[in-house]
Length: 410
Image 1 (spheres, one colour):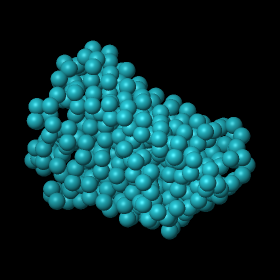
Image 2 (tube, rainbow, N blue to C red):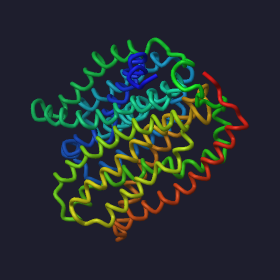
Image 3 (cartoon, one colour):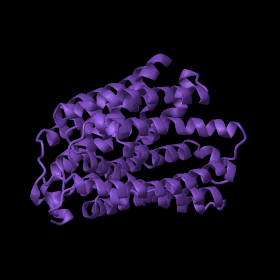
Image 4 (cartoon, rainbow, N blue to C red):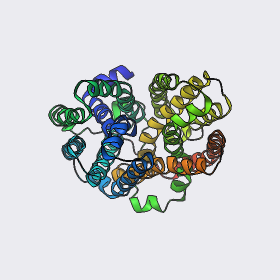
């Protein structure tokens, strides 16, 4: 079955996952940061106070997600969307209405938990449960929604800021979620999909169903995290301190911003490429390679002072992001099964959120301590190389284990 035929036959489920990822943007850092200046001015917060509040809200959302994320194992996906989307809409409304710092903290917590956390978690868990032989393709098509949000929503939001102000813009977002996104996504997801043998190749990539407790006791799971958490930690750290880096290098901020389009294009392209590779070779086979472009991006950013280096950095970052976005959606069901996938993914997503919260703070403290930021980025690249070597060991162990635990043939 070709990709186009697969997309035609499964359009409703792919579209539902795509839209969940797209609208998760309202809880993502890049979107919330658009209002950062206005929020700091209106609430009288310093950069440090605003950053600390955001970090605490993110950490709290990560802790909650480890338990709340299990809901997708016990209720239909449509029911979960009927819970998650309205609460995200409520959070957007609170952002438009809040007048106190305490309520602002609660708002950020809800945005992070139900936006970045549960919207993407629900989408990826659905694709993992509903598809088997073509899981990589399904995940890759769904994750394009994240890049679509990054490409389109900042422009739209900034335009609304100019037209109706930042608070009314957040109110408009809340109304969009409740009256447009919710009925459409619920309608698409209300029919559950069952993996079909005719989806593609005869070999499906689904292991026996591990419990969450078994996964927590699996040494390979914790070793894998040395690589799995790297993109979230490194990417968030670099982009959070982008203004400092631009000032340090003497670059134009507009040049850095323009290069995001390069990253988005590469992310989409290589998410789709990775989907095909996962379907053909299996997710563990990709593990030793997905961090190599990220290592290269770190080395370019650390060593190339010329402004043109920004575009090389963004291109390599996009390749790694594309691979990781698809890989992480397909990896867990392939090696741990689907029955408890929601609970297992909740742990991994929470740890990614945690790493994305800690990265900017740790790097900022090192900068304050006089440790060169480019040197920090160079060390991040070395970490990726070391983690890639570890992932080669992990991949071999996983493949060997799969031979003794026959895969299901959905």
